Image (cartoon, rainbow, N blue to C red):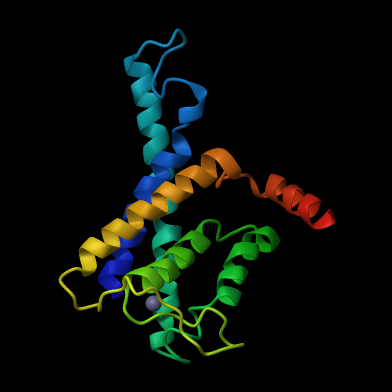
Length: 188
Ligand SMILES: [Zn+2]
């Protein structure tokens, strides 16, 4: 996918994730006052929650979505910064240094878009292997379909993230809790 596609994907993802993180459909009515009725206050609170999480997510996710293509300038494009070890670094970085949360989501979505939406795949296991993996669903980056494919892939990603966040593990789990969780998992 080209730069436009990755920015669009990152921006849409930040907006969608902002909604997912601030709305909990499993705990009853989405907007409601104390007795369940819709009040101006409840709408305002929800609105500012959503706006707050979109603001908090947009920069890290868009930056992450742009990062892998830095390897067009050095190393080998679609290999050096398009692999699972690099994604792993972004995943664990926040636990060690307390910053760069959510950047991994941008990096991961870049990979997904390159694999599913673009004709040429990426070298997921680089530097262990240089083989590039891609789905036959991909279109060339100059195709008229590129934007439509980007939007469709983003919608699919948001659906998966919605399920993960609400039924598996909260994506905004505080780092301290996540570290404990990680420790418990590793300890098993
Ligand atoms: Zn790329």
